[in-house]
Image (cartoon, rainbow, N blue to C red):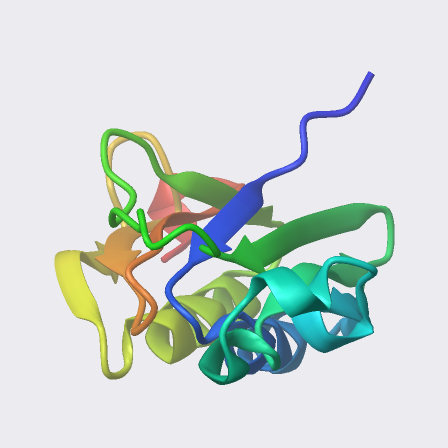
Length: 139
């Protein structure tokens, strides 16, 4: 069994998936837009480019997403998507890229439980927890 984050975004899903593909070194795939779907005529012209389903594949990890099509988008809250890395420098780079143009809740730093840990919300409103495995004394 696998738990897969499925993001609901506000009309910018394709852009967000491309961003995540760059940050996490993966491949963005837009599986279907509104215009490509059999129900395209049920949506306004302004929604034809919206993503009905897309994903970023990163090795054995995947993040999926779509645009909010019913006009009921609400920003995510009450959780973080956690990404854990063995390499401290890579974890810091990922955190810095996610936090850029977003909001940092906790700067990436050594803690009593991690060689590197930080909390941020990215430019798309998605909350992230980035951490580094390893000895806290090493950093």
